[in-house]
Image 1 (cartoon, rainbow, N blue to C red):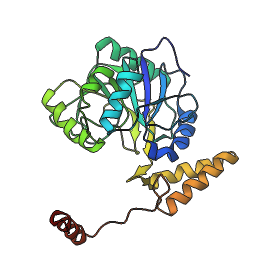
Image 2 (cartoon, rainbow, N blue to C red; image 1 turned 180 degrees about the horizontal axis):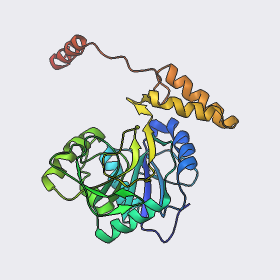
Image 3 (cartoon, rainbow, N blue to C red; image 1 turned 45 degrees about the vertical axis):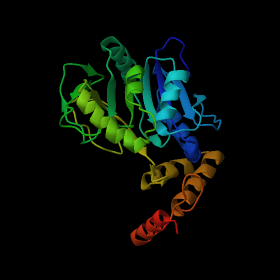
Length: 284
């Protein structure tokens, strides 16, 4: 599915512990993605090999989240722009390939640093005169918005994204501290309502007839969220392999198993946690 002439990559940034989700991501991506979108497709793991249809498997090696992503961008991905996904973002509506094609062309022409493609109330935007397939490409009001650094679906200029990946940042710290860095930098950030993230409504003044796609994040605290249930129902109507995967997903969901098949971690009582911390400090 790779296109030799394109200068854009679609990267699925996965972790090995979430291997259980790879099959679901691949199934629904194949079902709803438009292959005419001019991208090269990479599915990135840490150390384990994987085969997701249409994707080239690249590996970062073990390490903290920001270090793994930076390694991939510097050593494995040669394209100028990166359309960022994670393995728990499962599509459930068709994606317009013409939108992706025009977006990449405009981003390259104007050297845009990032274009957020997911709708959320945390973003406050300002209209522009640029439209793609009926969607207004707006500019984010950095001062009034939150999560300027987020790991939801976004088109990034690769070199700019690398600058937002300091050493040894886990994903939550990267979003939190990265947002502060981007507010201070105050470089333009663009936004379009292409994807309804977890069913959220559009936030821009788009033209009538603009057709949105949608995805849900099916993972929460390393376990399946309620949002996985419609996907299970769809898989149950599929072939034998898909039905077997639906059954495995249902088992994980009902038994609150983590994605690597372990029972839900027991929460440690706050008093016990404090007691254990004191005992460790005292060497007892």
